[in-house]
Image 1: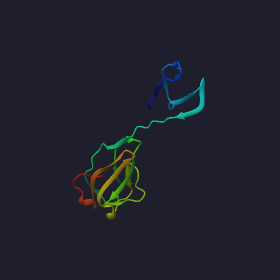
Image 2: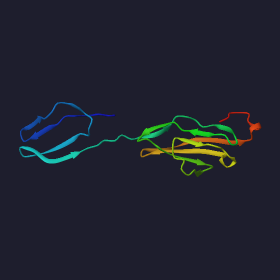
Image 3: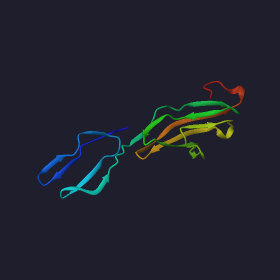
Amino acid sequence: MHRAKSRLMAFTGSGSEELSEMVNNPNPPLCFSLQGDGVSADVLEVEIRISEPPEVKNNAGYYKVKEGHKFMLSVSSSGMPPPDFQWRLNGVEVEGANGATYLVDKISWGDAGTYTCSVGNAAGKVLWEEAVVDVVLDDEVEGDEL
């Protein structure tokens, strides 16, 4: 959490007077408007949000998965605000697949193809690299297995 340091000052016709010392304020800073000899009832609350575009931290790859087995892909990312996710299979959005992890309990032939994941927030969007998934029979598995 970022804490704002603020100094409240009263500005009068003869100069300015410090109303408070430097403070660590966990709440957004307040701005007071002065009229005449005192502080008016007008208060402006200011909230500062720092946005960072998402970054994807892990790579995709090529996988052979046995038909009927559990299958999972995962994206590790950062960003502020936290990013949203949308998985695609062969360029088509997978309905309901909008988390950092995509899981299929029992993979079938229709799950084979090229997976990507769009990772985005208010500051930007990136596309997670492709993961190519082949669905094979039990006796066909040779390389990386999920």
